Figure (tube, rainbow, N blue to C red):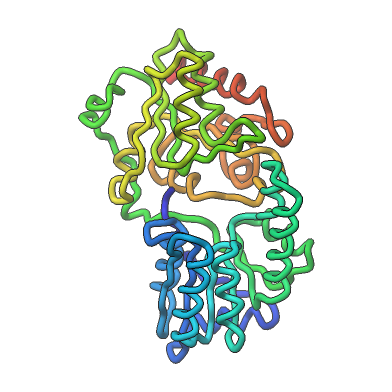
Amino acid sequence: GSPLTAGAIPQQPVGTGRRAFELMRDQDRSILFIANGGPESAAAERARRFAAATVGRTRVLTRPTGRLRSVSTLTSMALAFDPDLVYCVDLAVVPVVVGVVSSRKAKLIVDTGDYPSAFFRQIRSGVAKVMAARAMEEVVYRRADAVVVRGIHHSAIMRGHGVRRVAVIPDGVDLEQVTPQTDLALRERHGLHKVLTVGIAGHFTWYERLRGGLGRELVCALSLLRDLPIHVVLIGDGPGLSHLRVLAAELGVSQRLHILGWIPYQHYAQYLSLIDVCVLTQTNDQSSWVRTTGKLPGYMASGRYILASAVGTAQSILPDEMLIPYVGHWDETYPAKLATRLRDLARHP
């Protein structure tokens, strides 16, 4: 997905959270950023952007492979840095454990765009996993000097859990890098120069208990549009792609499914220009209402037309003609509704 940028530091954090944010402006202080991802991940890019926007001595740590190895390695590096402030990007086991252990004498900020326990309930994970996520959330809520979220819906949920030190810093993109583009040669190279394209850029997951994941609704909708020259373009990687290939073969639409794989960020906007209509589907549940994702600002900055489920931040800022109702935790009728809207767009481009 697209990198996340710092934006403005909030002006009114509450209580000791105010001191935590003030440390990000103090040139005599040291700030450690811990990202829940590798060097090329969106979390790492968000951490680097925040580090660039702060003053003082900073360091960004990204996650190696393997959870236990990551905790051990990053904790040693964090303690050696001896920070005045630890800033964790993502409410996940590795950054939270490292952050809590290495910040005993430092302020702690946790930056999250997700609600892990609600998400695990949504994908029907086991009780133990949900309870572990809930315990991790409570540690953050009680230990962090401030919590940063990406949207107002998440802020309200946090406050409902008794967290008072909450600040909202939305997702964003670098507008010097992500601009509307047209590359006719690239479209022709991929056989997309005479068709309407609809697609997604992101990390493609798959959940066995739901029998679906990112992109399933789009492949299913494509099977309902056999009479129209509409093709699907998927940009990114992830374990869900193999399942989508199988599904496309079963539905007889493989020839109209184009999986382009991971694209370096410097080519992100160029390849996004291959997609005429970008799809952003989130289920209508608590975990999705708090998740803003980097996809939405990336699509907007690239000048793409968007079809999104009427959930969360998309519901708040997109016009009605770009929104599709999503009913419940898992809407089996959504592919048909998406196909209807795509049929309208094909007739009236």
